[in-house]
Image 1 (cartoon, one colour):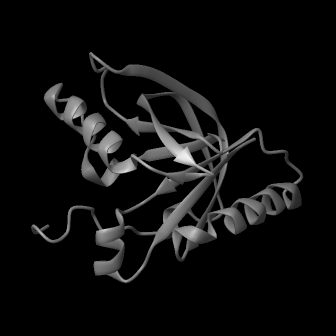
Image 2: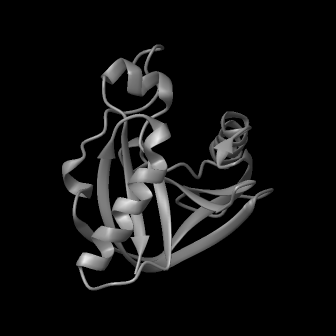
Length: 157
């Protein structure tokens, strides 16, 4: 990695069309303010989360990086960053469940379309989605450098 690229290159194959089971997977949680689902302080929240995680030496291996976003309303989203141990000064949560995953590629403005496609995908599998998390695999700067903007949707079933 160099100073112009902060995110590891993402390989979509292991995530596309899979069933993933999480059992007490540890995350730290924070909230982002949104305006009609458009995040307003995403970058500063993620920097704050990463800073606390790094200070606690709780970061996962970069190849295991997982940051899940859950849109809870047009005004707020929740961020879940995978960690390897509990972190002081931030909410720690465990997520358990079975998830269907699909990889999408394109501009962030397509998120609503991807959400609908994911609901259809889950329904076609004979399942019902309880929640749908977004995994933004790279920051916008790195997505531009790599030429691909992959986003994985995790549908809890």
